Length: 303
Image 1 (cartoon, one colour):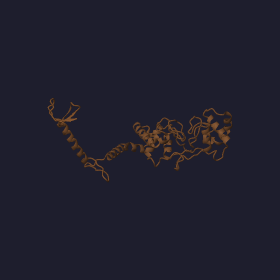
Image 2: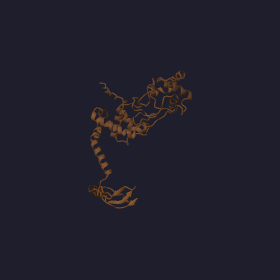
Image 3: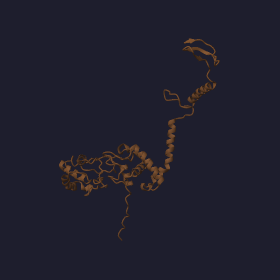
Image 4: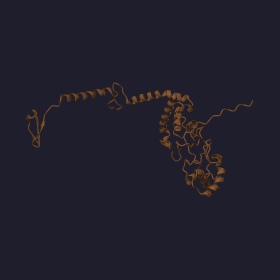
């Protein structure tokens, strides 16, 4: 690289004196004024921004700026505004029986959307994002319910749970026929075959025949003589092909041996009453909800 300053014949600008490869010359031209003014304005803007908004970290926090702006504070304002906008809906839901909320399209839409969000935060870890359930966790999309699937029953189950320790919880339990030596393993196997046959599963017919009287003596009190269950005690329907822990011979035998005794937490105290209503309405709307039971008028007293 040679160093030789001169005036460029084409542009009339002085060169820097730097030449590469014999003919590449660097011109010494000033930057355009508009570019320089823009650059200076950006510097001034940066200093102004540092003074007005939070900018620099300090040993105890950060500079607050003259405006005292905080993005966290803005988010808190937005959340407060959203809650304020919901207050009228939540107040109406709090004052209305849950069955009547479904009759108000606007209120029901708000309840269902709010319930879906609450369900996703609190219930989905067990029941799944789509409420499809898993082994040991009920599918909430079908119409098979241990403790009934009408709105009030769902609200009660969410509020107090199952075997949760709450005084109002669903606290019925299936006997542990195997662990407590109530029945012998061959008898449990026969009952399992019979129970599975009620759902039209291919079973050992001889074993199912032996299991029928054992079922009548030990299981029919809760599940019914026909095996269709009883929502009063949380006894599942054994005839619909829906099995919480699986329908294989091994899994049904294990249920009879151990009684299972799954637990659902009580959400009273964790969720406010309105939120529990919202979740109940959302779950009921998934497609498996049952209609409200008809309430009969009390009989007149004899005259």
